[in-house]
Image (cartoon, rainbow, N blue to C red; front, side, top):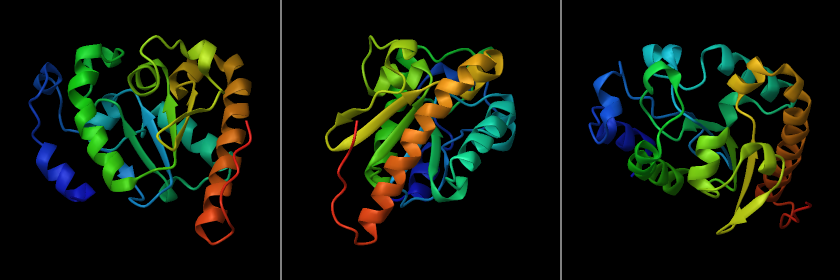
Length: 196
């Protein structure tokens, strides 16, 4: 199984009602060997048209954050918790996430990330804790099965609430440092020693 096979398997997915209004399935993009994976909520209108994640206004802000953190977008993998656009860009419903998460699990098995960044409440609830509130858990590392999760604000939220950009930047500095540590380890620099 590789990412192209996953795309071929699900490009015409009809597992949940989201398929009825989509233009195309947005599986994800980036480096299939990246130790860092970013998981957002769902495709928006621009993503639905282009078939790529995070290409609209929120994606442009994410690109700026990644650039400031010196994390090249093309070196990491970016996807969403649901692969079809929810109507009106609403937050995905639990049953939609529960259905679509099997695709994400297959992506995990191929990529095997060591760090997963959840952007917003939906992927944070789906992957970390169903009761999690993003305002309470953001910026705090959670480790599950040897993978470190960092929940932070979704860029769309930051566009609506610019004052939260400072907190998100603090989160991305931690992400940057952890990512560099993993890259150093993979290049033969010894085991990673996480700092919280």
